[in-house]
Length: 417
Image (cartoon, rainbow, N blue to C red; front, side):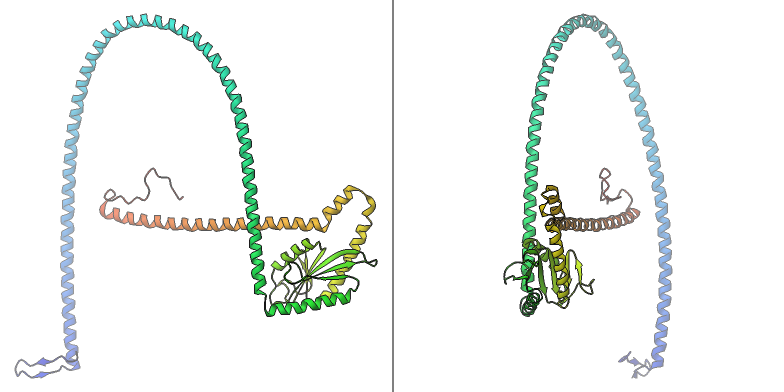
């Protein structure tokens, strides 16, 4: 109310109202506003009641008129139907009398034609039997030709499917090899720099330790840039004969990578090694000390000397046991040695691991598609539910036949249960 001026009607004196006068005026205005609001509300209720009564009376009058028109139309329709039936009955009676006379004449003619027809039918029956016999012979010949053609087509189709399957398998194998090469290249680049220098130091120490511990064995270093492990220990017995191989992979990183195991197993198969060992600074999370995981032994640099002694001794004993069986000359023993040997075991493991990898990939794709279908199904249910709410509201206002809001027609299949 700041800046509001009051003028006296007697002396024309102007002054600003105080807080008490301002509150009194505001109170009086609020009272007047409340009375005015109540009066308007009462007038609105009276008008609304009057409008509803007029609307109800008009609906009743309309309903009565519709019933009268309906009864009148029904009576007119019934009278029209009765007149039409009577006229049709008279016409049909005249037609039946005329038809009876015509039928008598036609019956005589028909008997004559029936005799001629029976004679022709007998002749046609004889010719039909001869023709049927000829067709039966031709049908048997055509069936034999068709059977031979179907067998030929089926053989060609199976051959094409087998060829397509082989091509698809080759494509998948090529894609898998490309992905492995790409992953190996990325891993190699990420471990360059200082990590590579630290790894080379540990590799040199590992080779020197093995050479000092096993002076009669051959320690082969794998050159830089060559695919394979870091070094290979060729185990020799007391006569200097080769008894087996131990392949080593040296790692000096903060985290253990599970793909090291698969790479080393592949290198072990390529080099024909008997045992694979990963010497690493970081062990797997589930291992606290030296152990075996997926056919590969894992240990730290401090444990590698003891691990090498144990593995070397086991290789020598196995070589002596195999040597005692060499002179039996039995093919069954040779086959048994191959099936129980390391080469067959590793090759079969590689096949099984590839199969499990493909199976897991297919399962992941299936799970992803099922998840996508469930999401779309929920979205469709939400759309149908909201459409049903809108349809119910519109029909409640305008009537069931006023607007067609059906998303599905009556003969459309139901998409969702």
